[in-house]
Image 1 (cartoon, rainbow, N blue to C red):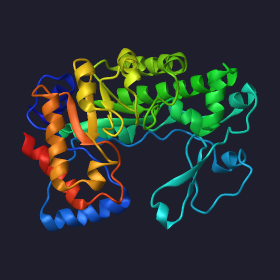
Image 2 (image 1 turned 180 degrees about the horizontal axis):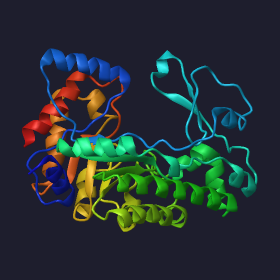
Image 3 (image 1 turned 135 degrees about the vertical axis):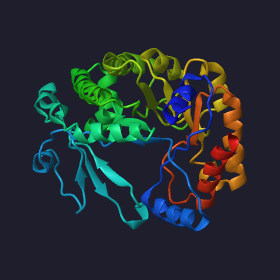
Length: 351
């Protein structure tokens, strides 16, 4: 099988030749592991590659600053949606503090007047070029659509405000979520038209022990909109794989995510859900990505424990595939470089 065929076969649960390696690191760990890998002669290739992000037309930073009633530290950045991300001190590493431009809004008219990003003018040339180059090298191209509905909504409005708006059936919630759904549809259609193999999207809707909202609230406000976003992808190219990310405990929502049309669920955090149980109930319907704990095994286990967890989860998935085994999230500074190396070697050795 080619690399792309191998990837699709794992997702389709029809067998595979080898297990792709897939992980990401924070800048501090990336620097240290790069040096360690050179010293140890560790060679590897990521199983899939993100193409460049789409760059929409966004309002000027001065416009976004007008929605805040405060000054920001030097180095603060504003997303295309106007969300301010302020840097912390050295101990925070790459983490930032988020501020919400719609936090004080009290009318739908304010949302209507807000400068949402315009993806219709995005330059597709870098994305198309990247897809062509990746496919020429037999590599999987991923369009990173990122957070699609719930997360950008609370980034803009604030978590408490958004939750209250939804529970009170406030027209502001409907208007905001519809605006963001259309932005997501515009984004994924462009990626799909550029020929990517996978579109990565998601919203964190789970906490460490429970859902962030009731199943009823999710099905009322978010499921129909996610279904529309995925349908927009299928209209352009029905063969694109949809990888959906949500941290935390999301087991009650998995049937709804399947209904909405996802192909791969990420990250199946072992600290929140048992992969064996999740696979037993849903492994014949979707594939999974992740399952190696970044709150447990990767930072605090031994290299042998990392290896055992990789092998255990791949054995649960079985010979037909259905699991892209990987750390469940960005690897943070406390992860030993030896554990990263152990993950890479385990993927190589299993197949």
